[in-house]
Image (tube, rainbow, N blue to C red; front, side, top):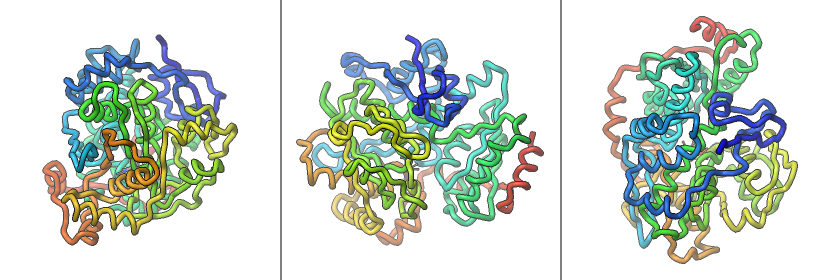
Amino acid sequence: MRLEFTSTNGQSPSVNLREALLAGQAPDRGLYFLKHFPRLNPEAIAEFPALPYHEIAFRVLSQYTDGIVEPATLAAMCRDAYDFVVPLEKVYDRVHIMRLDQGPTASFKDFAARMMARLMGRFLQEENRQLTIVTATSGDTGAAVAHAFHNIPGFQVVVLFPQDEISQSQRKLMTVLKGNVRTVAIDGKFDDCQAMVKKAFADPTLKHLPLSSANSINIGRLLPQSVYYFYAASRLAKPGEDMVFSVPSGNFGDMMGAMVAKQMGLPVRKIIVPVNDNDAFPRFLATGVYEKVVPSRNSVSNAMNVGHPSNLARLVSLYDGQMDETGKIKRLPNLEAMRRDLFSSSISDDRTRETIRDVWTKYELLLEAHGAVAWAGFQDCLAVEPLNGLPTAILETANPAKFPEEIERTIGFSPDVPPAMEAMNKLPEDYDRMGADYEIFREYLLGRH
Ligand SMILES: *Cc1c(COP(=O)(O)O)cnc(C)c1O
C-alpha cells in the first residue's frame, strides 16, 4: 500500500514519506499528515511485550517505509538510534513515570531527532545531495538536533541560541560538538534567533543554498514519537487493555505521537494533555472557541511556552475539522469525540513547583517542571473521571539535571548529573558570537557554503 501524506490545508498534492520529510512544510503552508493510518492488528501488538525498544520501533516505523527504506536498513537505524534505556518507574498501583530523558541530550526530543537524522541522511545519500540544517533554539531542540545530525554525512548544522536565555548545561550540550556542527550565540532573545532563521529561509539571495529546518512540524519528528506509547503499553498493560497517558504539551508533537499510536490500533482510553499558562487548548476543548495566547507566556516549564501549538492543525484534522496555519478554524472538529478521548488542564507555575515538592516528599520521586505538569494534569483528570485503575504512563520529558537551579530552589538540593551529561560538561566549548543582525547572519551562511 502506498501511504499518501496530505496537507492539513488541503491545497497541495499528496506526497510520500521521503518527500514529506525533506520538504518539512507543505507548499500551501499546511502540515503533512495521513488520512488513513497503517494499522497493527492485536496479534502483532501482542508480540511487543517480548521485544526490546528498538525492535518495537522497527515494527511500528516499518509500516511507513515500505518501498522507501529497506527493512534491514531501517532495523539497523532503529538499533543505532535507540541504544539507551526507557525507564518505567512504578509510583503507586498501576501509575508509572516513563522517563524519556536518557538520550544524549536528556530530553524526549532525542527520540525523534535521532531517527529523523538517520532517515534524512539516507535520502540525501541516495540522491547524492548536501543539506544545511539551520535551526533556532530556546534550549532542548537545538541540542537534540545538533547531536542527532552530528557526523552524519551530507549535513552541515547551524544552531542559533539566545546568549543569555539558556542554562549553562543546555548550552554545553551544543557547543562542545565539533565537526559539522556550528553553534552561534546571538546577542538577543529567542524571538530574534527565530526571526533570523525565518528570514534566511525566505531570502531570495540564499535560494541557491540547500537549507532545511528539521523543525517540530516535520512529520519525520512525529512518527518516531508514537513508538514509546507502544513500548509503555507492552510493559504495563495486559493484551488488549486500555492505556492512559499524560503528556506535558507545548507544540503538541509529543501528544500527537500518542494519537498516531491510537490510530494505528493501540488501545488507549485517555490522553491527558496538560499545558502551562499557555492555555489556548484547554479553553478550546471547553468552549469550542480557539484563541491563541499572544504573546506566549513565560513559565518554569519553558520548553512548553507556546501560545499557538503548531500541531493543533493535525489534531483538528483527525477529528474531521480544519485549522489553518494561523490558527483560524475553517471547520469545527467533532468536539464531543475530542472530549471523550482527551483531557486538558492548565497548570500554573505555583502548582508546578508545589507538585515537584509534593511528589518528592510523598514518593521520593524527582520530577522537573515539565514532568510535574504531566503529574498535576493526571490528578486533574482523576478528579473528574476515575479511570478505574487503568495502566498509566506519565511522561517525564527532560532530566532534572538540565534545570539544577530551579530544582535546588524548589526542594533544596541539586539533582545528580547523568554520566553522559557529566562527560560533555568537561569538554571545551567552541561557538561563534553574533549580534541580532540579519545581514551579518546572511554573510555568515554564505561564507560557510
Ligand atoms: C519540547 C518539550 C516539551 C513539549 O513537547 P511538544 O511536542 O512541543 O508538545 C515538553 N517537555 C520538554 C522537556 C520539551 O523539551
